[in-house]
Image 1 (cartoon, helix red, strand yellow):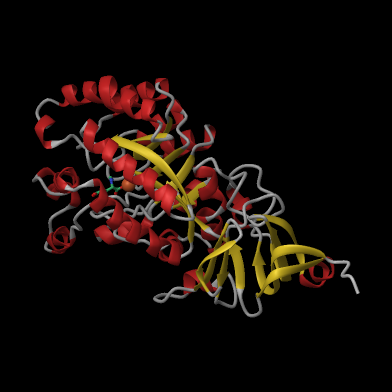
Image 2 (image 1 turned 90 degrees about the horizontal axis):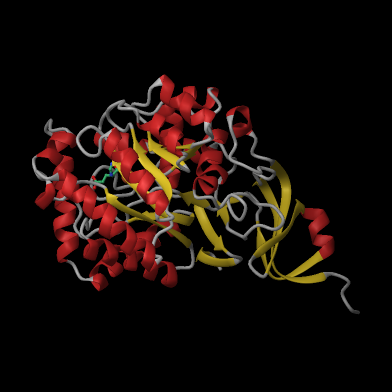
Length: 422
Ligand code: NIG
Ligand code: FE
């Protein structure tokens, strides 16, 4: 007898708890951040890499039959994590600085005495493109195993035209080689390199007149990012560079008010950045500027945790003010060597008092909007990419509550199982 059912690629059935996060035409704000769009005993139908239906298991089972059927029994199924702020391309790790911080030196002190970002620059300049590629590939594979299906990756450890291009080519190769989406950001304004430390204006000119046009012409980055902070790029320098980057066609992101409240969040509002990140020291006026201008606040609690300090961003005040909050790892060799969005969700809850539903929203749909990809990923609904996690846990609250091992059982990207049980 010929089956009446439509033949498709994949069906996930009998899902105990399905987090859809469906129906967000823009990043979620305020009380919306608690709406997970939960379904119990739900199902997801996938064909040709896309989600074609989400509904009750009984209903979808009647309509579809699939090559591949996955059981969601005793599982939570949710959108793949989007990690919208990472620095995964580097050579050496910097655990020596971790120990220096334990002995009382601060991140800024270490950086002023020649360590920090500058020590990463030294080794990235020496390394070959192939070496950097192999190291980064291994790191991002671990991020995938931890459930990340879309990732932003920054340059910024080269700080010369040639070595920034080398980093961005590595990111382009990673995009080719790996099954996830990788979004490239040019961060030539991550620091002032050693040879320009006493002639900062000259480096700014190099950025404007050579690096920005070269990177733009090569088409190797979608965004421009800058470290706006007292000891690095001040507000005037940041405004000037961000406006110039816009002229070259880059969209804007910022490392803003991480350590000192110097008006980075206000500047993000003024220049209409897509996302302002860190914000541990953002002022009330800064938070208002983010809310008024619909700038996403990408918070990085892993960094504060790893630096062993207390200045977590005021997530509760931001949510109350109507700012859309996203979360990211900030994975990098200096201030935060964390490659796992699950840990970031736990920290967001424990240290910034975000509720589990808010933190999950921030790590999926809002993070997708922080990369302007909220229309294609970040939620499970018809018409979106099938970027899906099968989580071995009984409920969504278990995600921040559980500490230690990963809850990720399988990772599906564009309808293909790329990690875990196939
Ligand atoms: O986001 N704040 C600036 N950049 C990174 C740290 C990079 C490093 O220390 O190597 C960050 O925390
Ligand atoms: Fe960063």
